[in-house]
Structure formats: C-alpha cells, structure tokens
Length: 350
Ligand code: SF4
Ligand code: SF4
Image (cartoon, rainbow, N blue to C red):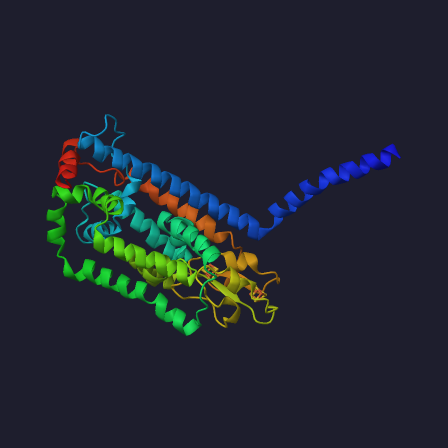
C-alpha cells in the first residue's frame, strides 16, 4: 500500500517534469524561446548604448558628472548615414572616421537579407522587437481587422517604395564628394545622437507621424511599421529576393490546418502558397515552419534542397558575429575622431 502511494506520488512529481521536458522537445516552443532570447539580448545591448549616448550628451551639456565614453551600437539609430558610408566606401575605399559602426550594422542587415531572408528584421532589429510587442498589446485591445491578400499587398507596398526612394537618394542624388565633406562636419559626427534627440524630443510633425503609425498598428492588429512602412525593411526585402533560403509548402503533404498562416507575423497566406515564398514581406522568422504539424508539408529550402529550420538562426548568429569580429579586426567598428570633436558635434545639437 505504502509502495503504491509512493509510486503515485512519484508519478505526480514526475508529471510536471515530463510536461516541461516535452515542452523543450516542441520545436515551436524552442524556436520562440531562441528568437526571444536573441532579440532580448540585442535590445538590451542597444538600450545600454543609447543610455550611454544620452549620458555623454548630458555630460557635454554639464547636466551630469559621469560619462561612459562613445558607444557604438547606438550607430544603428542612423541607418541612412550607414547607407551613405557604405556607398562611399564602395566607391572610394574610404571609411567614415566618426561612426563607421552604422555602415557595419547596415552590412550585417544586408548580408542577412541576401542569405536568410529579412532575418535582421525578425531576429535582431530592436525597433522590430518593440513594435512586435506593441502588436501583441494591440491584438489584446482590438481583435485586428481582417485584410484580404490583395489589400495586404497594397498596405505593405509603401516600405518598398520608400526603400527604393532611399536607394535612389543615396546612389544618385547626393554626390560622394558631398559625403566626404560631410564626414568632417560636427553634426555628422553625432548623427546617432541627433536621431536619439528626435525620439526624446520629437517635434509636432514627428509626433503626429508616430501617433498615426501607432494607431494603424493597433487598429490593424499588426506591427505596421516593420511590415508596411520601414524603408530599411523595404531595402532588406528587395535584397532578400536573392536569398537561397525560402519556405516552401508541399500541397501533397499539407493537411490544410492553416496553422502556418496563423503563425505568420507578416500575415502571408502561407497555407495557400503554391510556390516557394519569395516575397520581400517574409522576415525569415521560421514561425510557420515550426507551427506546421504535418511532416514534410512546410519546409525551409536551400537552393531547392530541404534543410532544418535552425539554418536561419545559425546564419543570423554566424553573420552577426563574423561581420562584427571582422569589423573590429579591420579597425572599422570604432571611430577615429577625438573626444574633443565629438564634444564639438554634441554642442552643435544644442
Ligand atoms: S512565418 Fe514564415 S512566411 Fe511568415 S514571415 Fe515568418 S518565415 Fe516568412
Ligand atoms: S501548417 Fe502545414 S499542414 Fe497546416 S496548412 Fe500550413 S503547410 Fe499545411
């Protein structure tokens, strides 16, 4: 009797452990945990660097006594200068002395897009992480409006138009000689701080645009900034068309449960796809593949050969670490301008 109750107790004690273990065996749970961890780490590092940058600014203004030096990750705040720097480097071989990290971050995003869809957007971008979190809150308040695939294509198109405009602006409208001159301008040296200041003290036009984007995200029940408006997302989407990694559905193995379409944060009708998903809307999050319950119905393909969905996170981490290490070794991660030049630049911001 005592033995029976002991075994019942041990079975009860083992039950939660078993369910915990089976949770970790669930690829959807694992993928979500991994993606959330990577995004949280990047968001944390980025936030720390933005706080360091704000402290440096306040120190220059004489409002605080401590500063922790010039951070580099906050360079991600000024992707436009990163695009200009990249084009100038391609044309002249010269590197921006002030904030070369912004070019390195753009290169990381482009390489990820070319090799693994817009994975920068769904695995790394801190802005994407924040807007996705807002989308979750939005869906709790509003159920979200159902949007037909045709309307969806229209409302997601502005990011490509804006992306093409930015590419044209960088490649054709601003002469390289102007950028080389701008590198010596005090304002250019602190372009990350100029953008951070816009977030902290937005003027009326920027506040209005921000509220409209936020309102649209809540009403449509989706992260509308990343999927509909971000010009950088549009550029990465165009680059991702070349990606050899694509999600493809096998209609013969598909049981038509639509779990993939429900899991897709980009609202792509995965369950109806008859060809590999090459749209620049796909962010390579892999949620659809992880959600599919039918063996072989939805797979990631590399040059038409099925590969595990873990190929995307591996590519993300390898590209991120390899490019960053190469940039540090080649001396193009840290700027070479003096602290006095940075202080002068910060003073020009007022
Ligand atoms: S869920 Fe699938 S189709 Fe949708 S964005 Fe993620 S990888 Fe692309
Ligand atoms: S989740 Fe898999 S089985 Fe279900 S509709 Fe999508 S591809 Fe078909």
